[in-house]
Length: 263
Image (cartoon, rainbow, N blue to C red; front, top):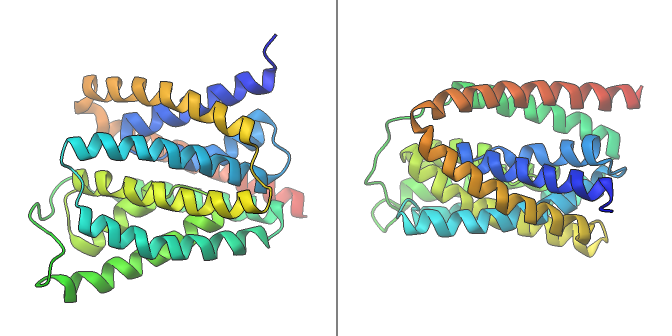
């Protein structure tokens, strides 16, 4: 008999991968609530460290797929990711110093904020030809490093890949179209996840068996999500809005649970 916790972990991984494949992000922000409230992980810190491993691995697969489609702005992506990794290490150190219930409360508030950002985000426009070079560096470098550092801090603190934070950050920093922002964001998602995961792993806060199950489920979910995305391409904006509402509702639940535990 397969333990129920393993089945729930595989299912959670599948849902995370499905979401990533279907609408290009958001699966990672659901990982911690799924591990805590569905799988039953008692330590929020272990949930954060474990989910970061799976998020990073799934993002690397996504990078490969987008690179083949030539939808990654590599210089912009690498600068953003490099500054973000510094922020992620600092954020992870700060997150481990915060009490678990208070961390969940803050995480819920972040989910609500991310959901609002998703609802307000525009899906078209931008400069297709934007690139980081000697001419554009004076204008782009400060924005890319600033946004990267800030998003990395949040990613490391809450143990999320940060895709829905990175995409608006890249768009605001460079005015690149969303398709390139999504592809380029996965470079940072992978880098942030690895930075956060290594920090938590060194502290003994990763359940490696659970991480493997999350990854296995995530691969299946990503394949299903990618297939559905092709068939439902015209409905992706609607799906993204519906998912934004789900993120906000889950965030409200998580923050209320965290606040109740604190009182």
